Image (tube, rainbow over all chains, first blue to last red; front, side, top):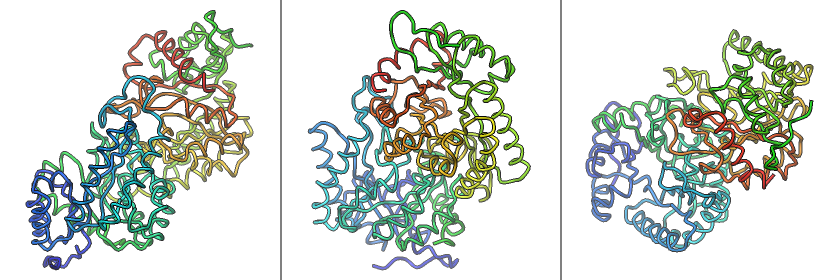
Length: 300
Length: 300
């Protein structure tokens, strides 16, 4: 299959991927159809939407439409400090690796999990002083990536470490910077453990240019995800990911750094925002394509 | 003047300082009296409370009570990209330096300001793509610290750079890590430009232990401020600073790093939290002293 031709208005959308979380109301098939209508050649998919359709059927829906899968979201949650939870997490990650291989993507995004003290994502800390050992939680992530790496390699899938904004360090991901993700990735081949550059999560990092260059030089940039840092923060800060151009991020500069690092892959738009989710899917896709063409593409 | 003796219960509060923002409802005099009642030897003061009393009178209130001033909050806001605003900011910082000298503290905390695109702290980005050059804003901070340093040195005051949590990088402070603050401080003597380690802002940093050690080795730790990272985040995330022990931070580890770095100064408790502010001041001071003795002091 080949990717659909760019639409007749002549804009180059050949690297633009729709992450299915952006059009939350759509099923996988609807998202695939919407991407095709807008002339996008790729989708980034979430496991819940894939499982809803069934993995094999999902792969068929996407392939039949002639789209690429730019990434599968998400594995991870590797910070548990008890054996049963750790074993369950490793099992689930092996399933995710198989799903990625079935879907024909090599990029499995890993959100590595928060502190054991977290009652729930976004929720209060458990009482007492236990479960707050951040250094230990980070070491467990590194160790468990080591356990998963051979299985991933055997399936042709790359474990893509996602540094999350430090706002999520307590409850969602103890990997907080690109440099830290690269340190964890370093012992493994670049096609087995990589990193994602997600503007929302890393835009503030004083060391960002250097770490993007480092990631590029070692061939580890598996995905470039774009969305904006919008204030005021939503009650759930995860939902403050806005359309490119609606917030504070300097996309020209960061995109240039990613391009200079040699990244030539897809640019995935992953937005979590109630107003965006409430809009009709086609309108959302049209807006994100416009923003991409205006604010990202010139710097790629 | 000497600090008041520890209260009769024998707890060692000799390094514990009450930041006046913690007891928001209290005037400066009330905060000073409250600190004395609880056996604390120091206060960290905010400029608004000082100006309310008058700077000279404020200095007298604190000195008459036999308290130290551990720090003055705050100078900064140095990121403006137009000359008039930059000049006004530099003038205000010179006034803050004089106030610090008058109060008898050498530590002036600097919150350096956000991006020019910020409409207001916590507010939406201004339209367009201007004012989002984070690299440029950071350079302006470095340049303006250079302009203020001789004036600060002449008054025996240290400019204390405060890295703020990356959640505030857009709208409040473009210094986001301790390492970045130390890079900006490095060209100046340690008694002219220093840094503050505020647990709320830096606890998530994968490089924290190394940067605390670096700050200690160069004599630049001007203040150790403690409060906890509490979830769910308040609508204004600035107000998610909770009592030590109510959130996710591993105070044993970070306090040990600060102690190992050779810091022997005051430990300032600075909490912004509606429930804390709604509590009677004496109750707040009692709670923070209890938490300090139980969760911080053993590791100092």
